[in-house]
Amino acid sequence: MADFERIRRAARLSVAPMMDWTDRHCRFFHRQLSREALLYTEMVTAPALVRGRALHLLEHSPEEHPVALQLGGSDPAELAQAARLGEAAGYDEINLNVGCPSDRVQSGTFGAVLMRDPKLVADCCAAMLETADVEVTVKCRIGVDEQQPAELLPAFLETVAAAGVSRFIIHARKAWLEGLSPKENRDIPPLDYDLVLETKHRFPDLHISINGGITSLAAAKGFLEAGLDGVMIGRAAYHHPTDILARADRDIFGRDHVADPVAVAQAMLPYIEAHLAAGGKLGQVTRHMLGLFAGRPGARAWRRLLSEGAHRPGAGPELVQEALAHVTAVRGAV
Ligand SMILES: Cc1cc2nc3c(=O)[nH]c(=O)nc-3n(C[C@H](O)[C@H](O)[C@H](O)COP(=O)(O)O)c2cc1C
Image 1: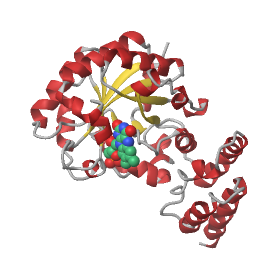
Image 2: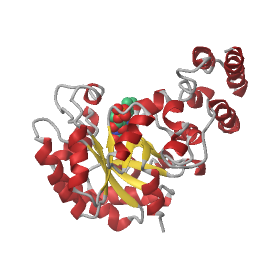
Image 3: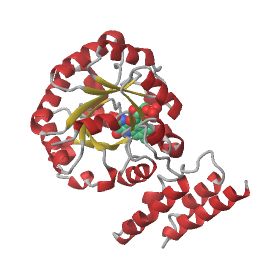
Image 4: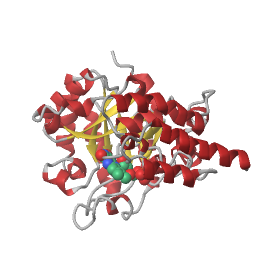
């Protein structure tokens, strides 16, 4: 039986699903910074799992829990099968992507375009809920294109909640499906935090997380104090992981734990060794760690040594130790 309460607690702070970024190595690294925050996979499409049998996309380490699998798709039966595979692989939550505006995704009727078809989203979620005994959640936008978010969003939530979904993550901006690139769609449409706050007041029984443009732990705390149930952070958590995650266990979850980035780097060494022993490459892990000391003494040397050295033939954990020695030397000097 899945531990729904634990996941809901963890969802007070989550790291957003990000394609090519939040892979298993990134999540393992983030987990060294926070024991409590909820982590999300990159989006995995239901067709890749069900038709392509790409089950390697589900591989993850036990240390990553609590961890949610994000699925992309719009076929209820296929999503149900994918959710079952996700549950069998051990994921704590299955999240449906209703926010991603990329062309490739639009062509398969996944992602943000589904904001136009709440009934289909509801059917997809009902099928997943029927099949898998894990929490099914939806990550959505406040609308797309010419839709009026103030009307659309409550109607969307009502329809999907009627199918049994009670937790939503709302990226507080529209997506423009024509004319903006996926990257522009994460910056250009204006953020409407007030609408998300109003939505929480209107649906007090739904668990609602806010996402989009949140760049500090203090801001995250502010949203929780304002009544939201959770805050999801994407880019800031990736580029400034220590700022967002190292104090999260204490400041957001009330636990007696603050991570030291030096200890985090050291904790990654056995993981890196195991990855290399299994035939992996150093850069596949260290590319996610470049921001570990961002804004702190030694940040530049750390980033430079890792990014320049990780791809050299034979590069191994000694490179991380060398970069760390630079950081600790600079730290000692200030
Ligand atoms: C590189 C990158 C990849 C992303 N991939 C996904 C994805 O696979 N699924 C998804 O729902 N959102 C994806 N997003 C959107 C983020 O989850 C998040 O909603 C968005 O970046 C806004 O949050 P932020 O301002 O805190 O970064 C991606 C964002 C970035 C930067």
